[in-house]
Image (cartoon, rainbow, N blue to C red; front, side, top):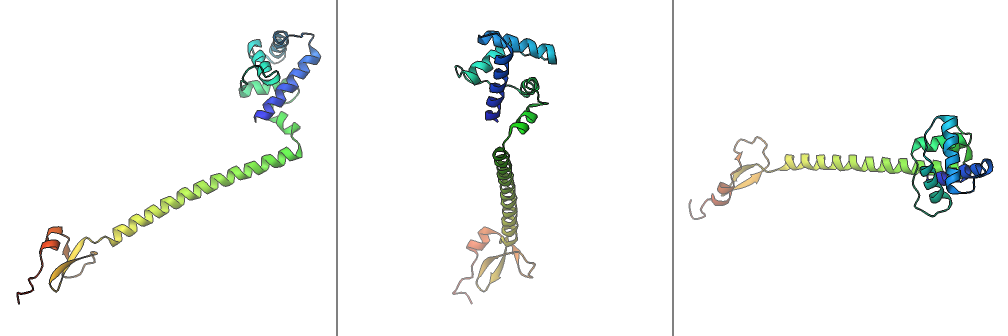
Length: 175
């Protein structure tokens, strides 16, 4: 996207250089601001235009990214319907192929993350259900002691009581 903004700015200021007799950045910016206001009724300050010029053309300052409306108006000034139209009509086959490829990669990344998220949720749900199913919440008397078991409705099973499970054992000497 940044490359396209750079290309747009270069094209705009080449056209300004051809149409205007102004030589200074300030003069070119005022000229472009007036043209845009007269032709399209869009207020674009000459200060912003100067910032675009010094950022994108001379590289003297940091680039300030224009908003979508500004990009559309500057594209309109060049004879395009919108910034998207500017990009579409100036794209080479390599650019189109690269854009389609990156779109496919982006969509693939999204699908991978979504499927990963779904799988994590399914695995957690499955582990939760399994742990609940196999939890040993009951106990049953086995010969001389109680043993933990999974509640299953057996006749002699009782609800798990940890104290009874640990302490209650049949004395081996007692017959």
